[in-house]
Length: 169
Image: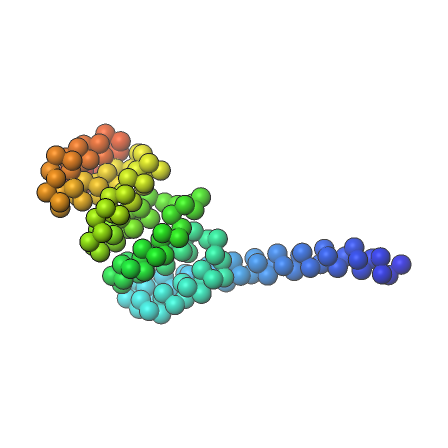
């Protein structure tokens, strides 16, 4: 009968439309994020950040959009919001070396040196072959006049990633 057919097809139809809406949200999130990145490139930080926030709301699971929001705050020199934004996604499956670099730098600039150091160590434990994170850790030690630890960090950076040139200087 017609009722039986409806009970079979209605749930399937609802599942299909939900997936389609979710897919549309993801696509819209990407379009908004691309536009936002263009605005940020032109130093229009507030407009870009506003669009990126909308993108994050549309696709909260997308690491790269959330990272771009954190990076936009970094470029705007709003380190408090960098920290808030990037702390939320540092355990994401798609996390990148750059998150630990920018998050650590933001803690450092905010005079939260222990958090900066902990962030670099956390990044290194996740990305042991990153010369860039050893470089950042070395710079933090250097700025704290701990030259021995700084040099050890730079040397370890050279050892794990010889092609990353900054550790040589």
